[in-house]
Length: 312
Image 1: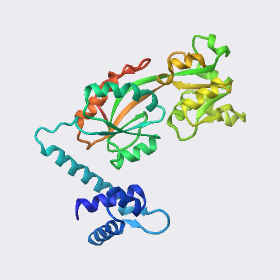
Image 2: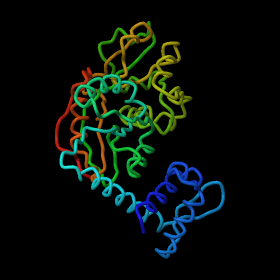
Image 3: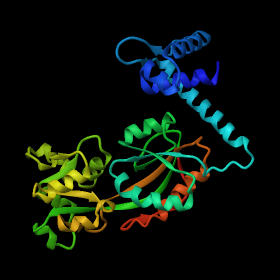
Image 4: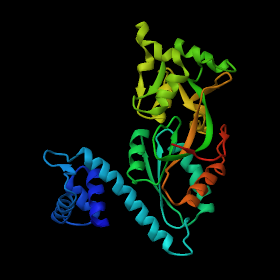
């Protein structure tokens, strides 16, 4: 058994395809296939179910590949720590961010990080929470920024900030004269939400329970009107399709000409934003610096947090 063979099986599990896995490992497909067959013979188990358009991982294969990922990470840590003066802030950091945070945090985070760690560029992945969690588990990203709750095992999670929600309405809407909106008032309006699968949609429905109960009451809801992104939704609202709920950091100066932004009454619905890594991720200084860069990023209308990581 070699580290190379372990890299091959991790790549196949990630790509679900021998050809793409071989390309990602910069070897020919026969070379990769022979090496994996040799490993299966050595272990006496079948790791992959061949056939069809996509390769399936067997039950024992899942466990072996998960352990192989940990072995590869530890081996990588040994290489990095071999140098006595190893600099954890040198070299790229692979960071995943969910769709409803990335466009608003990164333009402020990256300039701050460039000052704190100029030799640590970011390799960025923007995706849904579920996909980022899988990528973190497989070591495809080093850290992710997501919203709480985030229920996964084998992770460390640092709270970054609490972000209140606000209501966005078209210009001229009666609500723009109100000082604050009660969550229950949303049941009176056409409310635009992100498509299912986006955690911010779930957080809005949880905070404004009246929206979740509408289908049971037989209403033909505008809460079923969906947009693929917050940017799409804000333009639908500006055109008069209804109102929406947005995280405070997504509101920019350009919105003033399109929308009216009204706060919720206190205590306002909010979300907690987390920075998450695997427990075994060894570049702790890099994570601390990334956390510091968020604190220095100049985010407004949020409560910045500091503290020890939450283990799970």
